[in-house]
Image (cartoon, rainbow, N blue to C red):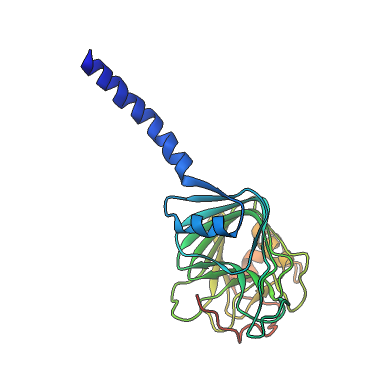
Length: 245
């Protein structure tokens, strides 16, 4: 009888342990402190936003993790530059999120209020769902290496990825590779598109890349033009910046 109870107990533990691990792996955050703590918790493999979050500092991602925005917003509300300006068009090296030398997945989120929304800095980042990078002072997504980083930046999209940038202008591109970085790679459904050093893409061109449609500028295949490095929309002066982790 005792052996039967022991077998039953061990079987019960074997059944519930995976469920316990799944619960422990997902952490819901509702403010800046929650978010920073979850990023420090290596057992939290999925960080889920329970509501919109305001942050007074750049949020650094330095380990493998998924940030599930649940269609919420992370908004930077801190200061910029040595003068502590409230204007995000004053350069202070402030990205709402920075992925540094690691892998990460970011889904269904708006990143706003910073100098830029997202810096992929020597990392591999997968974007899923709708990624809104509107409302940043210098643009949306930078694929920049910065000082001491040798790995090529890799941005991966799935078939449902949509990039939104309602505040894009000629000097606020949706995605760019600074002139002091090596070329970066965008991957979609196993196809890789090379984005050269100094190139800048609008959201229209970027989403055309994702949909494998003709370029709005040339009518040529986006696959062809991106593979031969002709997607550049001109240099808008961003290549002079150097970004540190």
